[in-house]
Image (tube, rainbow, N blue to C red; front, side):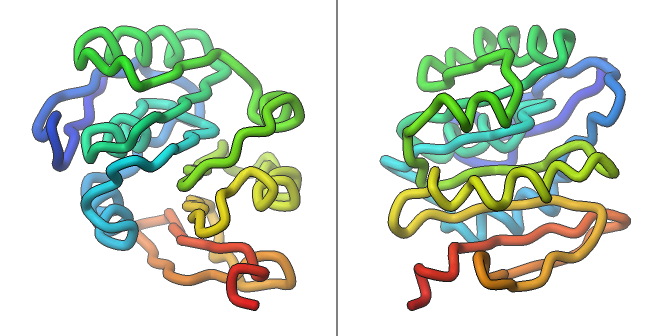
Length: 181
């Protein structure tokens, strides 16, 4: 089993274990620290959606920093089972963990989230399919965090507010353009 350590909050330094799985790339400690510096260290009362939860590091990190609720989606069976084990280990009752396809979930779910984490498998054009849908799932002042194999640019729908690069990973914090109107 591989492992990743939570950075801060009530579960600071707790270890999440996860299996080897194709395309599973844990968000590095440094990138997660940067992300939560951008979002603010305390997510009290926020609702979060992790579309491709993988290791669960982003969703569990948000809960560790007092998010009210986090929905973690993972389609692959082995990582999904590991998420359930980590939920039990942490006692993360605020985590709603589902074995689900991201596109199907978005089509059936009308909830709005304060933060959406989107780190899909690379080279499968997931962002082309997801970005047009995600603004409808964000709260009025919500944030979208995206990891990709390429740099995103602001367009007519999304404003890239912050971005960075770590190794081969480009990471971005976005808001819908109408949030700036």
